[in-house]
Length: 282
Figure (tube, rainbow, N blue to C red):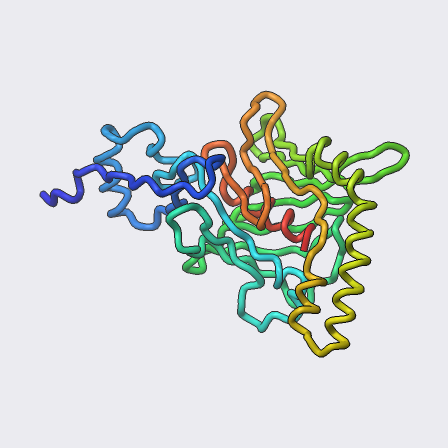
């Protein structure tokens, strides 16, 4: 009997880049029967965090980090036919940005705005269908698996200032029921600070714009670009969690990177929410 089929795998602990992030590893897709058989033989001795996850996945870590570039989402109509609009990539410590999924937006899709993004599909690294997302109107999106089975709904409620302040709010309702996961963009304290320092920012922006114009007149395009690159971004920290659980299922801090709790939400539904959230800020 092949010893490699019975020996339990030993996870490698990646190095931390930030003290606020726990150990992360990749989401592995179970694609071969032989690998599944090998894993079954080592399940009994594997730690709980390495047990097989839901939806037919192979053992996955309790958390993973993904990155979703947003540049092509803004100009999906310019993407060459057959090419993905964007990708879902690994982003945790010790990873090399491997592709986890491809996102495809039709070139001729109408531009529906933030309340009705165009429909898109998600495929795996080898082209296998993972899911599809289509708008239903008023910020509501239906998410289905690659086999057409409903996975859940994602809803975006817009922010406003009057008659009272309200932050942009996302909610994810899995099809199997249970409490929805709700995430508000930015914290109340962060928005308060943002509003208070905004006047100072505009003064600094005016000064830097004048300096950039001066550098441009002197022919220093590089310096002019540096002066105009600085900008004040509104609060972005978003944590999706249910009313019953304090720990988030999805967490976004900055840089279009999302921290996922693998056991709390179907990864296909998490990918869909991440793409819509990034698109909202594209």
